[in-house]
Image: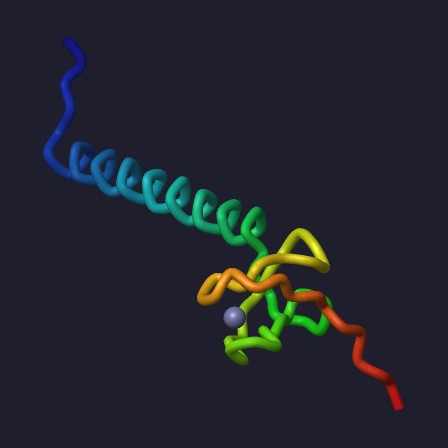
Length: 79
Ligand SMILES: [Zn+2]
């Protein structure tokens, strides 16, 4: 058996928690990178029927989550 002193055991305990925190932080960074819900002009929709504003990530045509009306993303004119 390997003799471990109490301060060494405490240091190992702290290192284990530090590693767990790094793993959780990396997981959160990965989830943020995958979801990538950033607002821009291309994924910002406003329903013509109920004027509900929502974000759609993957397409330019989608259904309104409130009234199920088809919404189309319009390109805003750049001045
Ligand atoms: Zn709607």
